[in-house]
Structure formats: C-alpha cells, structure tokens
Image (spheres, rainbow, N blue to C red):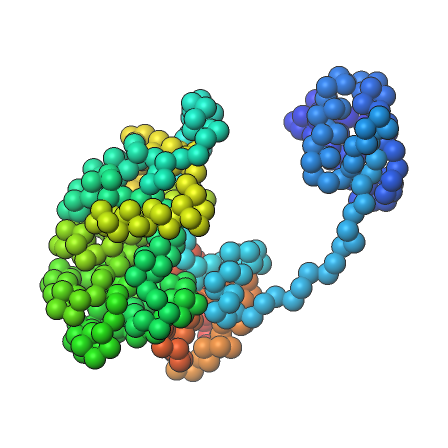
Length: 460
C-alpha cells in the first residue's frame, strides 16, 4: 500500500502520514474506505505497530481519517475545496485584521513589525527548550493575576534604568501592549467622553476608541512631539478625560517627544485634569535614551505601557502596564474579568530571554541595523521625490509624503497587486480625511524591489 524509505531524512511515521494524505488527495482512497489495521499496515510496510499507531493518531487529529471503536480506521469526509475569496481592498478594516493574514503581500513596506530574521530567534528557541524543564506549576497551572512575579521584579529593575520608579506590585503583565491600551481605555473612558490622541496616531487605538464611543480630537504631531499649543487649546475647550500618546519613536512618524515638550504636556495634564496614557513599545530601540513622561511624572497621572513584541517576538503576545497602585488594582480586575491570567509559559520564556546574557547584544545590533536602514530608506525615497517628515535615526518608521504626480489610492492598490503592502496616511488620522503621507517600515523597506516598483509608477 505504501513504499517507505528507511534511509530517507523524513521519519517513517511522517512518511506514512504523507503517503496516506497523498492517496486521499488523489482520490485513491475515497471517503468511508476502511484502512488496514495497525498490525496489518505495520507488517506490509515492515515497521513497528507503534509507528503506524502514531501515524494514524496524527491523521485522526488532523481530520483526514476517523477512528471507530472495534471497527478500525476510515477515510473521513472532506469539505469540498472552494476558490479563495478575492483579495480584500486595502482599507481600515484590512489594516486592523486582514494585514495579519494576507500572505500574498510578501513585502511589508508599511507593516508594523520587524521581519522575522531581525527578531531574537535564537533567544526564543533557547527559552522554549528551557521551558520543557520548567516545573509543573508553570506548564500546567494558571499564572498570577498581575503576571509572573519574577518577570515583574525584572521589569522593575529595567524600568528604573529609564528613570521610571515602578515597584513590582505597580505592574501588571498584559496580552501585548494592545491589551494594556484596552485596559486603560476601559478604566478611563466612557461613551461620549472626549479623548485626545496623536494625529497622526496609532491606527488600532483609533479604531478601539471609536468603537468604545469616544469623541476623538487629534493633537498634531511635530518633530519634537505633540503640538503643545494645540494641546493646550483643545484641553481648555473640550475638557478631555485622557490624552493617548506614543512618546518614543512614534508610530507612524518616527519622532520622539523632547524633554521640554514632555514637561509641558504634564503641566497641561495637571492644569486641565486629564490622565496621560504613554504608549512606549519602542523604548528599547532608542539609540539615545530620553526621559519618558512616566519618569518625569512618577506614575501619578501617567499610565505607562510597554511591550516585548518589537524586540523579542510578537508571537509572545506579552506587554505590561505600570501605574499608581489603585489604577493597577483596577486594571488587574478588568484583565481577570475579560480573560483571566496571562500565560505563565510565555511569561517564564520571556524572563529567560531577557536574562540569558545575549539579549543586550541583540538590542545593540538591532539598533545599529535600524539606524543604517533609516539612512538608506530616507535617501532612496528622497531620490524618488518623496518628502520625509522627519529624518529619524532609529526605530521602525518613517513618515513620507508622496510625489504630487502619484494618486495615493491607486498607488496603494497597485502595490497590493504587486505583493507590496503600503500604509497610506489616512489610516492614522483620528479626524478622518485624506493624506498624501505613507508610513514606511525601514526594516522591510530597505529593499531594492520596492524602489524599482516605486520608480516604475513614476515612469522612470
């Protein structure tokens, strides 16, 4: 029935699995056909019954065959193959969800994450191997409501290096920084409340706030951070409950809030009585550290959010929230009511990665690569007539205005047809409207194919 090769690289179990799948897909084994018994197939293939039993179990788990007690194994019914749906248009809905599943867009020039080979792959693999030796309470139990105590203690030390005094009991681990933003939103904002946000700003946060029923007012982003004069005017007139801002290596402009601007933001927050949510997932990518809003405020009005997705791996889905004790207690209750604890396995793995002795070297090299990519991408966009908003020296993003002869929407759709994901600026405007700017991820955009394609759109 099957021809196995004991000298092949693929294990015998895998050869049986793939051989039977191939026969089912080619119609040689139709739905309902009874397969040989475990012992019978083992004898015909010259392998152990344990090898066949493992292969059958894997095929049952994958839905290719069914096991019927006392009767044996049968080819399972398969749903008919359907033509793939047409590719979705590149719009706000696509950016929020489809971008994570659209495998046809191989060149993520506008993506929000690093390419896999820029991340801490060796550290991730080593940590996951170490998890196989973890105690049972880590592998089989729920985690701590606020997150792994040892990881929070390590974060306390790391944040202190940035000037942020956040004891471990004033930290709660989250399912990525996105859950931290959601917790802050649910803590502070009621439907109808006015909220200030960077403009341009983080597109996912804009969607979340609008979905919550908030009234959004955009604060223009300048080279040194939020436009403080406009922030003062909006705060005095609209009486917002909160200001959400991305301080370091801002998404999407790549700018960083200066210390002078940060001081003025905090003074306005106190004068006009609003909270500040500082989303800071890129802090580890700064080549030159700058004071954060949280470090200047002492976590009185500021809720501080961080993430491990940008430097370790987004697959961890792990971030954290730091705030005053009362806010952290309420955030922990909301976290537990929505989804219980985080994954003790992933939290333990993250701690291993952060303390393995090689993470610092990885960060140093990552900062260097990003700085080099920024320089090259800025130059190549400039050669094609694109105007870079601010020549950032680090982080993931550049914000650039398209040449006048290019139609933004047409360019975006043509790029998608060519397998290139662009991120048009209108996605990042809380007030809506049009924009001639695009967000570029320098790690992905440091690619000659992108510039050859952009040049072709200009007829060059």
